[in-house]
Length: 464
Image (cartoon, rainbow, N blue to C red; front, side, top):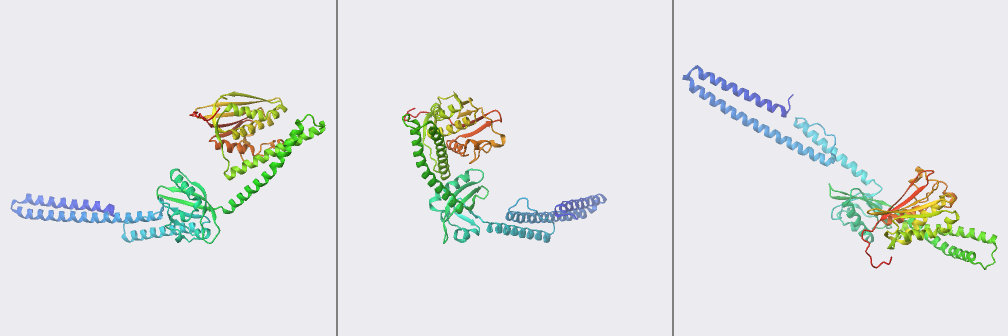
């Protein structure tokens, strides 16, 4: 059976053939008799009238069918828009009006079902879900709002986001919204939340901006218990470490004085024991300082005192600090490269990085080995490389050694805490740089870090 798109052209051709036949018949009549001209003319006039009426009828019908198809398309597109999926299965549209209406109703029901499922998923989520418009007003929120904040969804709809976010963190939240609208992907930020009749909470927000809908879609995860535990751990660590550092430092200074005083009556056997005890205390102090640095990092209190300094000074001070350790193993430290370059860094923190890398190099170097410190300047970065002749690092360990409490094989015998390289990484990254290692088992290791080079080293206030 022909559909509307097929039978209208076919019908038009049939009508045209019929009209041509009529005209041919009229021509034949004209040839038979000139006396019958009036009859032929009347016949032709009738044919023309019929042709015009037929053409008008078909044009009107064609227009009506096309208008109906456009209406159907609008209805279908509206249904698809409600479905909000571009590849949704669409029932075939037939030429029968009843079938078309049935298909449209089926699409509407499918759209409603999808919307109900999506709403059920959002409402049963354990996280707080909401959408904000360009003016930061809440335009949608899920049912978890009451459980997490004590406020019903209708108390939040059309309200400014300041009705939800704690005032102390509002600027931080707005900054996260601004970043989300300018980057591809999600932005995370932790803020306090206003609540009603329940204790205040802390949410970790994941925010993504939709350019299609011009909305911020926000998912808030309740991390109150986790943050409280972290804060308790930081406070406890800080208290214990501070209470330990002072007495241990005093005892270590006393032992150093005894060992350096040549007039005291400490016999050689006691002197050896004092030296061993002092080494243990110094190792314990390094552990305490590492824990303090870790605590500051986690609390966001790791501050940098940036100043201009030459690389040579950083390297020389670091080498001098580990000289006693290196001389015990008869390890020689050499320097080369662009040592006179200046960098804008926290001098104390950068020396801490170099001491850690040099100490590790001495630990793993063979007796009478050589350690090389090389400085290379590129257009935008300055790279410092500490190269040793140690046993090297296995490929599987390279990606983990800069993580917290991670130690390479054999580090247990050296008294390593697994925090040194983690803190080095944090310090270098806070300076806008990178840190890494190149190593092969049996061929030694090259630990390197890169920090931004100076592009304008004019600072007359700094004495270098």
